[in-house]
Length: 224
Image (cartoon, helix red, strand yellow):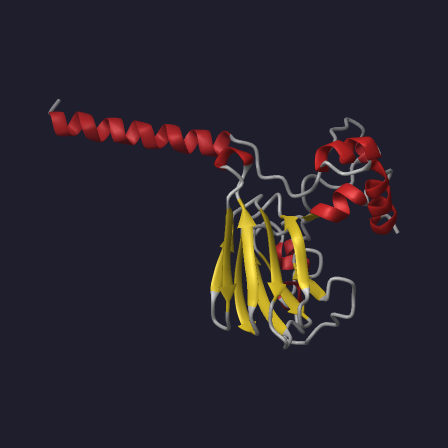
């Protein structure tokens, strides 16, 4: 067999092996956890949603209206995130995409958070945002930030802690796309200081190098 033919066969074998490995891997997680059960009476859904009978599917299943409507930002953060995901647009099920509208009051903040199941791409349509993310411990916890104006786009890699802050005196609006029908959201402060039941205050005091009484005050604030 000619050398070129041998190389071609090796390439095909490598591609076939890569395809097999990709197909054999587990699907991405679409929920926080999925505890196994052998009792069908206890089954709610398996990593996502049930599928509707195709004969009953309608155009409305793929339609959502109102993403253009400004949202109320009268809250502690001064921001509101409005998701368009599989929960309010059923046709997204299994398609691996979702969308969000982000409204900011002047100096409003979308506090540091992470999406465990998706990267995020953000486009600013109004106002000015200071946005950024922090890389992992392995990469030295580097901070990547940009000041974004109307028409600017920024990407937050999957799992990275990130934020957006309106640094202008006017309201700001942005839209975000996700590579999952349910990207998940873990807001750092809410999760650590507002868990139910509360994390042992001594654990958080040691982790954040704070006095225990400071931690307990934060837990009362976020646990409300």
